[in-house]
Image 1 (tube, helix red, strand yellow):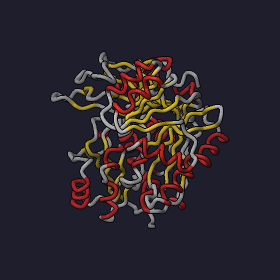
Image 2: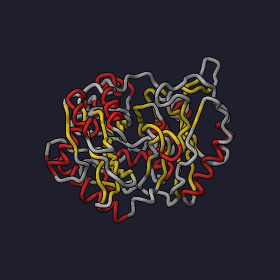
Image 3: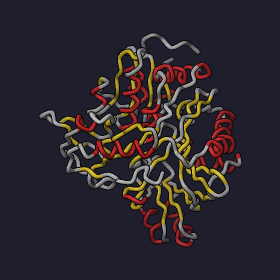
Length: 418
């Protein structure tokens, strides 16, 4: 345990909207020294120095940190965690926000998490695991509908199909290479619960709600997320307390008992069923795009918070959150989530931000002539604060009307039902 230094040189790993939101908030702290991001994107480059570094290579990250005097590393996406980057940094004595590779199994293997739930009586959907898609074929062919088919490993927030027919379930199986989890389909609204822990102290973050489906009305395929709101009106304080008591805290206790204590951000995707909250899945990181609305609502010092989480000092830091609501709307490239079209020109962001919103970049770069162009599936996150969800979403959509990008599309109903 140690007090946060007056100046901290920080490396953020990742290059999406979540990492832009993290960098933006870290940069606001008077304790933020040099801020580097690997690989970053065009928006992140406005607040941090983007560096070429393989974030999934533990040795490369440790060597870079040593060579550049980095005092704190914040890991955004899941892949570096599963690769053991946090383990290597801790072994080198570098404070890092993010779990060990063993603890990251909560996201890396859906089967691991389902088995842990079964062992510790953590409420989740009934399931069966299969070593391969071929092994699951007959089970999916006759399963009562709807049936949920999940790739067991990392899938970038995707890899899940809620099949309304057995044929659709079999088609989803055909796209999976590796182990499979097949689940009953839970009924109820979804909500996201986030915590930050240093391995002992747990801080519960404000609630949030992702919008996974591609099109309005929750139609179309699952995506990495087309928008988010915070707080979630669905996850009441009573339901949140129930989810912590029955799901999150037993999970943390189980991981500690296994000798793999969890440290970092943990996201619990919940289904609010008639029988109470049930676990859909864990992510071992801040969600994306939920991080965007959460960072906009964080009022206290982000560097102090991250330092405390990385050094076992979280008991001394209690983050302060805005009472305002936040909404983020994802603008994605045409063709997303299948074959997003890259290279289309984006303009009008200054006019959008002049309205008081924050545009976080998720997949952008600068062309050779300096223009901002799309370079990913999800490209922009238009994020706004308001006294309530209605005011925040109105401001976000007003800002979108200022953006000139013929290559993009977005949902028009983010937060509408809230």
